[in-house]
Length: 210
Length: 210
DNA sequence: GTCTATATGCGGATAGAC
DNA sequence: GTCTATCCGCATATAGAC
Image (cartoon, protein in one colour):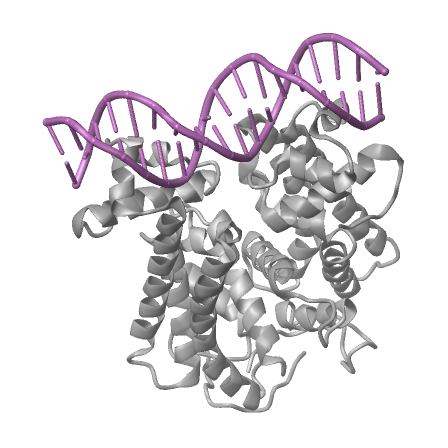
């Protein structure tokens, strides 16, 4: 469902559409399904969105905007590398698994349903988001705290994080913050965050692997 | 395309179907598309498969069979934990990114197109595959070589590995073996494999994190 | 085993009244 | 801004000839 704001009819439509697109996929969801869930008829939908694809694009663009905002906000206070990386992991998971789960999942898994033109636009937005990760990861590479191939590190991290949308259940034993802590430790084992986990050092130092 | 064997017409159909399902998605692919690519008419397809969904299920079941076989074969010679884990990472990536890429991707990303009944069957197969990972991971947990939540470790590892299907290009700088090595090092940094990487110790020992 | 022809329904989208 | 009514194409699936 993912009902968040209610700025007018369009947002309500987008929230419902996102939910249906996620659960049943874009192609299996008919505009009649969406209209029914909103208590209107299919014709009315086309007053707000010219095509079904426009609806999908709007859902996805909202998803990218939200996760970029979330990560940027979380980053605002942090200056040191370990905290910055942990913050990004946490913000990413919170945006992905929080109230915008529907839109985020659609963004991740429904882009093949877009026309080539729309695909280009949406993938460009995704690229912009992924670029946010490169600066801190490159820093970690320079300090010898992660594998030397920064792109591979980013893909591995984002892959692990994005996969949570397929299995994480909020009613389970782990809340999102705890999940973020654990995954951060797994994915950046040599980047220690001071205070939180009983680690000692935070400054870059020799990178012994046992 | 992913043409591997040619045991009769059915396999050819499945290979073509897998390719189209992967590239355009199950719903956007019509039985006519598949028939055209095979040089036949849509009616003929239904001589071999009673419904379009049956085709999807067959593609997916083939995918699970292949990756289980690949991982089991790779595991055959290995007795020690580090080598077993590295072997699983390598076999998983080879099955996922090799000649069966189409079927594997369909298995990962098209299961929502299945009817509930078929979904249950296919997800049971996927669970069986994922169960293969639990023994070595539990061992690593006991030895203190990974995070203590074995399920979380498995999901993180499989998430990172499965995501490669979205970005890995065989014509790039990294071949699958090198990719497997690098990802293994990232995902199991405290599990060292002797010989291959200039590491010294392989036996479990104190788990110092710097 | 493959073809042609077709039944049948649902899909996106539009027109025009209210 | 929402409704009703409808156009029209494409989808899966079937029947029966060859």
